[in-house]
Length: 290
Image 1 (cartoon, rainbow, N blue to C red):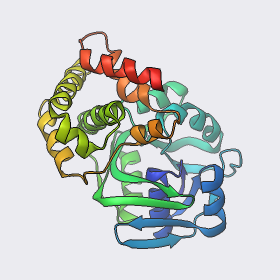
Image 2: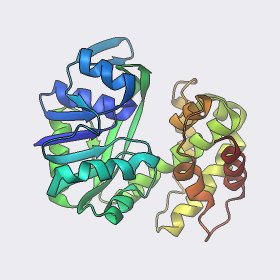
Image 3: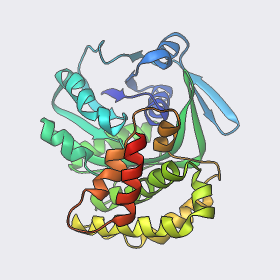
């Protein structure tokens, strides 16, 4: 089974390194200096006080060949369509596709683009590119969550089992995705708006965080998902992560890079069926900075 991991950032770099370490047939697709270092020296992973390095077959999306049985999209949500267009000619009708990009509608986007065998999913991990060729993973948090067609789910589960990586295949995958999304949508918006860490938001902007989480939960109901219980759970999670932990969207704002504002904030604000005044205010302000 040949695996493609599209995007070698904090999520994709860590997955590809773990798959390669387990002896799986994986190709990672990246770009820039990060890709060049990986091609030359392998990929390094820093996990708390442990560092390990793994040789990895790595290419650019302009240098694809062969055929892939499983494709994991670990790109930013705004790059998903381009990544699919480039990899799709190198897949077959039974190829399994799964996006770990932020957002709740990535699987729907892939199906709209023509993908047949798509799983819904999300991933829990605190990781980022520390420097070219180096992935920094913080803490013990890790779980890949996915679901859909049974055989496809089993194929992906086998990959994670062989790599000794924690995964879940819940019966209600949409609820599971929204449980992840409510946290990342709220705290990506809040850390970016206040230019502070998750710990800083929890300590200094608790009321706003609770209100924003409640607004997101109200939007989830429009899509038939009840995540009201996740409001307090998300606040509790924020209190437990390392104080200086932030979000990828916040880091992108700080670096003046393109952000996932539309999928993490705009998606909530643009849902017409319910009112989300706090999210709309923050989204409007952040859009001026993006």
